[in-house]
Image 1 (cartoon, rainbow, N blue to C red):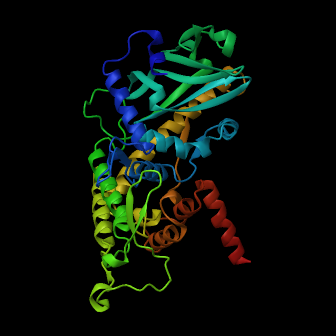
Image 2: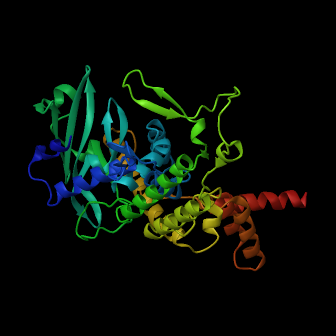
Length: 441
């Protein structure tokens, strides 16, 4: 698939290096990091063994995804019919169900793209990772041109479809087993078309690229792979502590038996733990038959403390507050705990949610443009995506805070109802009026 990106000529400078980084990030996210295997030790140890892994890269990305997209965003338009049209298209494509996984993968690979296009009289959305997209141009800080590659299946055959969006033009190229095919014959799409019937929206995490000039995004754990490696090293030691620390006893040599391996002829010595038959041995029983427990003490607390220290370092490196990730029963902090104080997690979350809102707005605008092209709705109006405050605060905290502000005269009852019930000003006035009428009756 990577070679398909070159269907339209030269690629951006640094493309090869970035693809290499994406492949490394993808392997780490999938639980196959470069440090995943180490050489076996011991007298008969040969080859490598897979270390036990905590999978912190995936946990980190899913946690950031949850903080960014914990609940469904509210789509607001001037035209209610337009809003219903957008929501119907999103629902048809499983948008809200797919977005948590989309954001998790985008944080891992340094970005993601949502492609919208008309197919069979319907508007279809594709959710693609940064490994399937190469940004080419940007305007006003937003990526507006690029190449992405997807997979198409027809009659049991697998095709790779490359699309280049530049300005208002879309160019397409189709490949099967490395050979170029007729796009229209297989997909029904034209090789060249306008963006009225298709478009894309690109999401990049709010993580600065050290280069500063690149359009490529950076993985959430791009700058902390050493920490992830250290976490897995400690976790592997923690799990092996229970293997190496298994109960051990020292027995006298007279209790050891020998047996010959019939396959190798090798003599093996063993202590029969299932033997319950009385044995008569010629020895000084008090001295020679004493069995000693030599079990090592498990260092559980030391390992947990080390893991939590490394997790705090990981939080520091990724813009989260210390303790947001922890190796104990407390786990992630609740949304209310995060919201209740100004923390690095809150700041990071607000940055990412702002970018997520822009992504949703861009997708909605593209849906409206395609719907207009299909003659289904009127020309596009301004679209807003708003995340509810209830994503970051539980209801009891929200109500208590607003009651205190109203009692202190710092907030009107209408504004308080708007925030608690997440409604418009007209709805809040109506609800307050209804409550007043109930009290009067």
